[in-house]
Length: 294
Image (cartoon, rainbow, N blue to C red; front, side):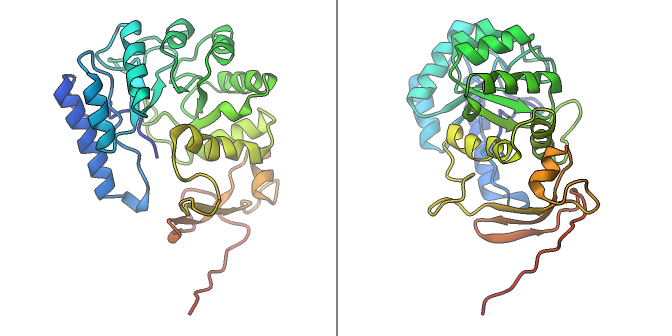
């Protein structure tokens, strides 16, 4: 899981010291306690007008590698936001923007013009969170910005497929990443990532194995994470699935293509089994057997 900023914390501090302290506290909290074994890239600070070059250097040294959504928080000047993103990038931090209409009270509308000036590493929820930009603005971002294109579950489905089609037209599907943009007004949807994969595989007519890569390898690459790809030397975080019982298609990839969700039968984190049969996903058509080595 990757934080886009601890924006829903009651009484969220907006001063320089408080923002840095909040980021460090969140990062340390989820490093020390991993619910269900999850890995949380927490502690993404929202930009502050008073941030200095040294602030970014110190945050990176303390393990803060992701910025919160640019376009949320006290920085209202686009030129100042662009300047701060450039400084953060110099120190190795990954940036992401809010995109589309405002959502929470501290956010602002972020259109193509503003995002092109900021030049983020990731165009966050390009299909809206909730409210999407017009198709011509989405095209403008796809063509004019080099950042990754984040498609989210809690967004506009028409805009999601529109973004996918523009990226495919440009032969740049490697820029697509998947998120949920939660928590939001609709809460924290279970299986949000899988639902986004199913949407792009079925309505978007993209091969399901590529849609899975959007949510795994593509995301790991832009976020500079040592996971998301099955390879020697990578962290062994593995999800095992099968087709859902009674589904129109018997396989995992087939279920995605038909718009169904697969059954999650096991989850391994760092090579350790942490989940046996998800209670949120459909019942399995095949139950895996686990053999213990002696």
